[in-house]
Amino acid sequence: MMRSDNIKKGINRTSHRSLLRACGLNDDDMKKPFIGIANSYTDIVPGHIHLNSLVKEIKEVIRSMGGVPFEFSTMAVCDGLAMNHEGMRYSLPSRELIANTVESMAMAHQFDALILMPSCDKVGPGMLMAAARLNIPTIVITGGPMMPGQYNGEPIDFIDVTEAVGAAQSGKISEEELYELEKCACPGAGSCAGLFTANTMACVTETLGMSLPGCATAHAVSDKKVDVARKSAEKIFELLEKDIKPSDIMTQEAFENAIIVDLALGGSTNTTLHIPAIAHEVEGVEVNLDLFDELSHKVPYICSIRPGGSNRMIDVDNAGGIPAVMKNLSSIISTDCMTVNAQTVEENLNEVSDIDYDVIHTIENPVRTEGGIAVLYGNIAPNGCVIKQGAVNEDMLVHSGPCKVYNSEEECVAAIENDEIVDGDVVVIKFEGPKGGPGMREMLNPTAAIMGRELYHVALITDGRFSGGSRGPCVGHISPEAAEGGPIGAIENGDIVSINVKERKINLELSDDEIQERLSKLEIPERNLKGWLKQYQQLATSADKGGVLK
Image 1 (cartoon, rainbow, N blue to C red):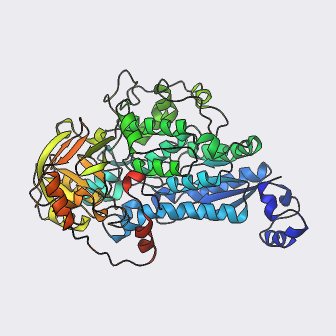
Image 2 (tube, one colour; image 1 turned 90 degrees about the vertical axis):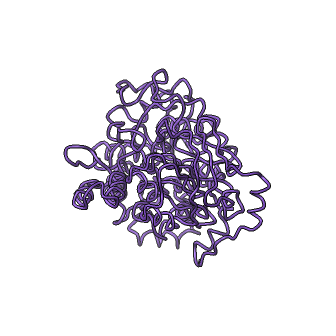
Image 3 (cartoon, rainbow, N blue to C red; image 1 turned 60 degrees about the horizontal axis):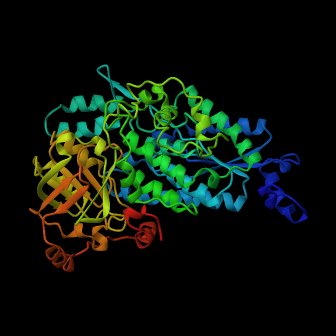
């Protein structure tokens, strides 16, 4: 019996079939599997503007193989466009809406299998959360990276533009140069060209086994991406036939593989939110910050990609992609995990041959001996916080300095633009966590403005989060957050904060009694909220728990 028989088989489903016939189905179609296609296409997000053309290819394959494709839409937020205004409060919460949308459509219409089409930051994790809940045969086709732009014969990307804004504001480049960068940095469809959050999550998805080998780095405008999409549509029928479900693929070992590859690549710190949130939906799997911390000491950083290095996703793809990364890590990952290829990781890796070791290093010759993400603990982060140590210069892995404290991103950006921040400072942005923001906004504008002004010895700490494109000593996800009475709320101007990434420590140089005394008088800013954000604030958990809803 097919799952879709619940809406199409038997006399009691006559009225259902009548509605299906209105959609163009005939008697033969009623005997075929119904394949749902969750398409996150939108006109306003570059990472998604090409998805409709991929869906056309997918539908053609499904029909030719005896299935009936049913496309439905989900939402997608562009973090770049939502950045530095109130719209960013909606980005992380959109993950939950996306998960709920896919779950609702698949349950209401009883699809036999799903093809998920995400690209940018929160869509991938949201769809994977839904896949875990639904546990029906599912394959993910991530939209693919954008090609880098070209400026004066050199490759550039979106982060170059964000940092150039700070350079222009401080007189280091002209507004004419900034305008030229603006015009050529983002040449077309795809998620921004470096290892920012969208591409990091695509790599995580492939490593988990939920997309075909090569999918994560197949670029949006490439023939390779079309080929991956068509092969994925073919493969969904094998998953159906063999009844291979997400629970067979997304095991504890698969999640640990995903974290290992994430650390080895130096991926976005947002994975410390998204991987635990996906794991939260899988029975018997436990992923938390402690696991990231444990593995970060063991996993070398083997692939230096923007913003932590000079390579971009096109270089990783040309070097062999995620299969090559996993091949080089095969001695420390679990290779018996099942994948949507209906093969184990080991069987997939047997097909990997050509690897460019200048881009994808071996374990024996890493870029750095430790993984790209580090988890820090201390008296202002008793539940932990995260830093992308692979994107921090060696001389800033240990830093101590006076604090300049702001209660919002806007206050901080204004201070940077007014040249109030100087080398040696520790910038503190509090009340920007899941509840305090609400929505845990990304702080790309402050970090880019600091880098654009060449303030290379400024640290920034927050209970908010950072874009995958942020670089430098940026410590985020400080938990518990200020809005829940977390110790970060006690920090005042002039206090000294010490950060020691090597020892995994972050501390406010203040006694516990003084911290508690200040917290007893803490005034939490009130947000004038309504609608979805008000609901989200009431339900959101802290960053160390993945920011999932209660």
